[in-house]
Amino acid sequence: MIEVENLVKRYGNHLAVDHLTFQVEPGKIYGFLGPNGAGKSTTMNMMTGYIAPTEGTVRINGFDIQKNAEEAKRCIGYLPEIPPLYQDMTVLEYLRFAAALKKIPKKEVETQLADIMEMTMTADVSDRLIKNLSKGYKQRVGLAQAILGYPEVIILDEPTVGLDPKQIIEIRELIRSLSEKHTVILSSHILSEVQAVCDEIMILSKGKLVACDTPEGLTGLMKGNATLEVHILGKEEALRKVLPFIAGITEFSVEKAPEKGAVKAVIQTEAGEDIREELFYALAENKLPILSMNRVEKSLEDIFLELTEDQDNGSSDTGAEDTDGTAYAADEAEQRKAGQPVPAMAGQMNENEGGNENESNL
Image 1 (cartoon, rainbow, N blue to C red):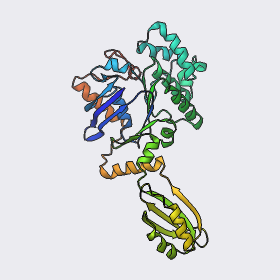
Image 2: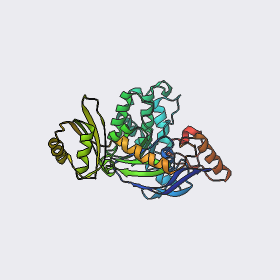
Image 3: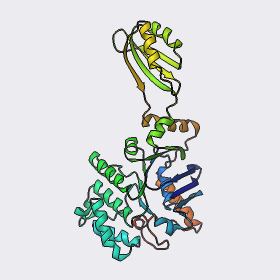
Image 4: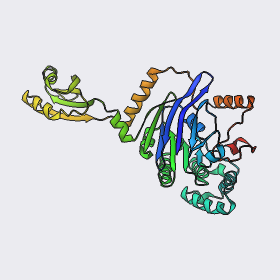
């Protein structure tokens, strides 16, 4: 459905996106996960045609987002991090305006509006001015405009940023319901959010794709050596004498434990090795009773930190941020100076139509 090939974006000397290549299959929720400045928003803006890539291609249902912009954008609904809302319009006025920009046939507009407002739970506020809505409801209105026209792909940039816990839960439930009929791509730097709603996770760091898999697959991918934490009643010297003779242990450390007369061992084993039974008998034979034994599993947070820290150690930071609006403005100015058209946001189908910046964000 979406093919991203060798995608690159440079802002002067800063490489914001570094040769990204991946595919998005229909019917799933994909999460872009990465620290601030990783390239998530820049990648989404290129995928939607809002900014042009320095190199590479994005194809939506076979349509190149640069060469066949109108056809490609018909397949996309986009909610930027800051929803493109007209504050002095009512919710209904705004959604009708968005429907007109998307060139939805007039006979279908009212039916779609009723369906989408029910789906996003905005029907009760349809006559209220957008500026008087809470942040959660404004986010829902922005999501409603992204769904208008029933695009196959819905792209959401930080959809829960700034929301309270109750609003976050509501938006997550809405995103899950969207996956029944749409492919959803969302970006976030919040681990729990991505883990809670996404079928596939793509981890970005320094503009590079460092991992792509299911949450379970990422955990399996990064397991490597297993870790076992054991608390025993006894002396450090006695425990140090036993552990070297147990097959499968690659390294260990021993230190005093909080319990009186106890010591703790953190044991690294080879991948796939389960030494618990052999360890139990060896300790029992040496009269070192076990107080507790726990296998330490890597969390998604551990995996995220390991992957992004590796990337940080392997590349230099130019200091530029992915979300730097100045960089976007400079990029747009360069395009205008060169006489190139500045791409509109996904959903605005008339490439030559004028308007203010809010119109280009629909």
